[in-house]
Length: 88
Image 1 (cartoon, rainbow, N blue to C red):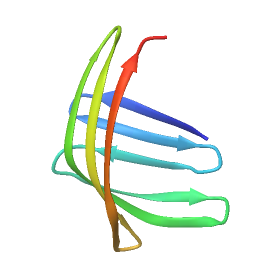
Image 2 (cartoon, rainbow, N blue to C red; image 1 turned 90 degrees about the vertical axis):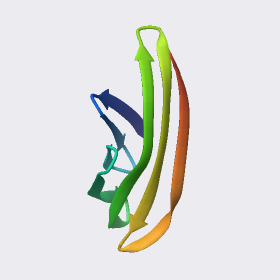
Image 3 (cartoon, helix red, strand yellow; image 1 turned 120 degrees about the horizontal axis):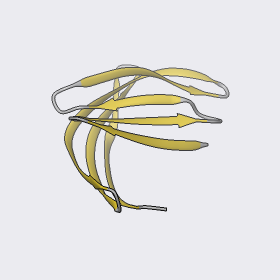
């Protein structure tokens, strides 16, 4: 499985490909609905961005993200990411 984060103005997109396939869009004040596809089936998922901060420069940077997850209309939890990024 490959997980990719794409940083755009006021938005972060997380994509998973491989055994699991999904796309989640994070933007403050925004809820994103998508399908989370797994080998045995798919389920509806909603992510609600609670906080988003990123500081990306050519040599790397950091991302802080907090969001609420709802799966099939049932609240499933709170996720928090802190990522330190380095250039290859």
